[in-house]
Length: 246
Image (cartoon, rainbow, N blue to C red; front, side):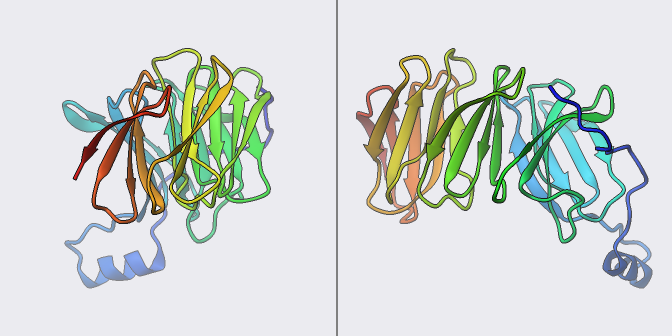
């Protein structure tokens, strides 16, 4: 990966905003907490990550306990953080009212060396990032980019309908990868099988899809729509409907 000079997220004492300081002054027993910008699990759900105004935190899920923290000296904060399993490699997207880097950049952070080892830039705001050991998937509002992790070579581009929440799921235990995202019209799901190099379009709902989940092996897909009345489970390989849960 190409190194980007000057990309510095060295640990520092967290700053306290003026409003938080005022609250703490008014009530000295109250501990000011920074706003939360992001929550997500790692690939095998052994821990979850929290993006904050002053950095990010990692917590073990079983047993639950704080595992790691990284503080940054900025009020901009971390709007999105993705970790590669339990390694020292992270993808960071800045957030908050005054981000230190634009929201259209993904910074690849190596915490072992405490520096950014790569950077991906886009024309619009990054909505989501998904990681595998071999690929990085970056989700924008109407486009998805798939990169080779080793050299950041662009492998694929996928057009989608408007996707403001960054809906996208990938398989982690299957090789090659299965990727599921929104299609080109309301209620449609697109399944990309990187092994067969084929795309499958599934009309999952009449309404807008607002939630999706993919099994680790990429064989089963669950979706829900804005109506909120049912969950549909599909065979992601051929698109057949397997079950409806009302």
